[in-house]
Image 1 (tube, rainbow, N blue to C red):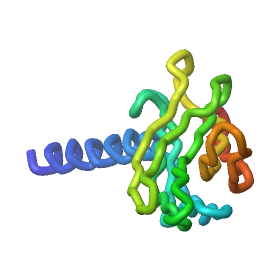
Image 2: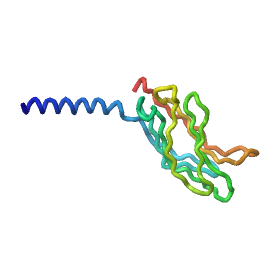
Image 3: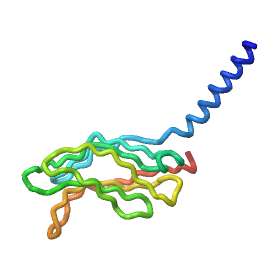
Image 4: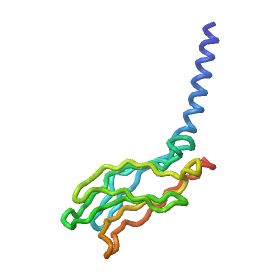
Length: 142
């Protein structure tokens, strides 16, 4: 009887490990983004697996207005494959912590994302933006 219970427990642990491994998201660090008047630091991201949080690209970090006297706002922009840029505004003259998720509702998972931060200089002058960085993960290949 003890052997049967121990055998069942061992099978349960092995099955639990097999299920947990594919459910693990793939993530990493977002390097610091910097341009005139704006900075994004302490950033991290993860590509959630299909069926977890919509298969979203989840990211977080600190968005800072580094030129508080210029009276311009700052924002982070994210572009998920097949969609336009989505803006997340910070606060003028302050630093804010952002934690967001972006996904395409027509797909099971997100595989390609572009990310940048900018200072919004209004309608007449071009915005100052850090270079766009591309993040990808091929879920079909692991």
